[in-house]
Length: 523
Image (cartoon, rainbow, N blue to C red; front, side, top):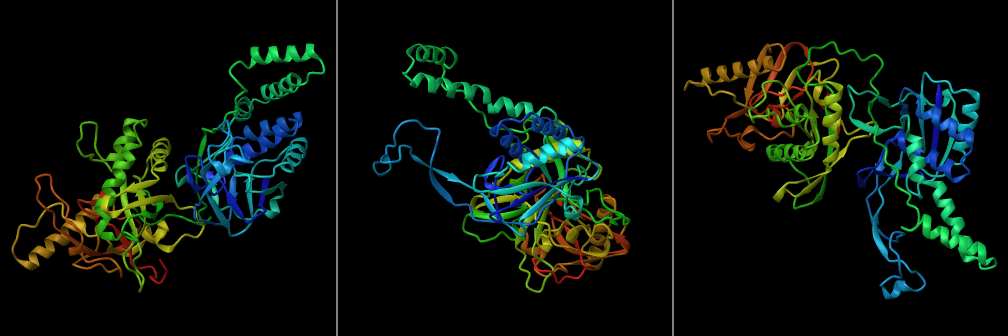
């Protein structure tokens, strides 16, 4: 096993996600760690042995497993700092002396760590002695990973100090995509760092300012005009484009034996955080508005994706007709099933069809990762953040909603099942039987066995879920309204979710949760 260990000396991480300065990056991307090592290499003489070691590291055929503690996000505060990208004196009177640069607003995402040390481990890799020595020396030169305040101590670790990883490369279950180095990364970083040109420019500037030798000074000035006519050499920010899907490590003995639905049992979980607006939180009755805006936001970020993935996200084919096969479904993850539950939305889940190819899943997650906030009109603006906690809130754990892998025999709706057809009878008993049969057929439509019993009820069996009449009704194409109802399902054998039933199953209606697990967990 080969191990890189990183201790965060201040007890916090200061590093922003590559596409959002308002969100901290955690766990640290292996690519960021590689870039920190490359920067230390460039800034300390570019030892050839270190370069060979970095080339060895980027050519590894596998991405590392990660053992990282939970990170508790701190509030993002706007700081006003001097910037290097604006020439000339400050226009502000009080800033002009002695400071000659304007202060500009900057935001730095930070998070406190439960523990200060993380590990990147390659279980099946053994580093040659020369490579190990070079990497050990290079690690000793790394002082920060991320912002300059994110001070670290780094070393080549031993297998015995790592423990069990909690993040593993797994494209099939991936919930986040982390940047990783690939062959050619170091060469690209060298080109962007542009060390040779920077050193040449600095040397010529020194000679051009030294009038002790007029001839040398003149030659230096001439070369500055010839070689650097457009100004100082440019150093570009690093930009890694290779990503690897990572998922929380599954228990070693996990064996999904219970039959499941047409949806993948590992939904993508995202937390909702209020940015502004009149409400402290959203409730389950807002599901339709939230799902519609969410789908619109995803589609607005999918113009560069393949047609098959756009159809997966939209639920419609190229002609605008609804897809017959399963597609992306929206899961409202609410605080329910607890004596103090109030039904508020804690987050959203995105369920992909089971059996989706790795390529399509990875491409779809690109669009998901681009959506950082949702503007919901009178409901306010809400930030969407990926869940990376090792032990997340109970109602943000996929297993709380899918019962994966063991399954459950008893389920109840959290949002009502919208009728896909209306019963044709005025007799109350016959009406209820037809509704129950409709719900049973909806179970078989998503790949489940027909339930033994279906209990149609106006209220959910889960504490905190609103009654059916509190939810807005879905509209048909002709403008008519669909009726809906809560239901309790009892199967002869355990089944696993996600269980989504009825006409609104892709928009958050008909979403079921097992009731066989102990419902005593906090929100």
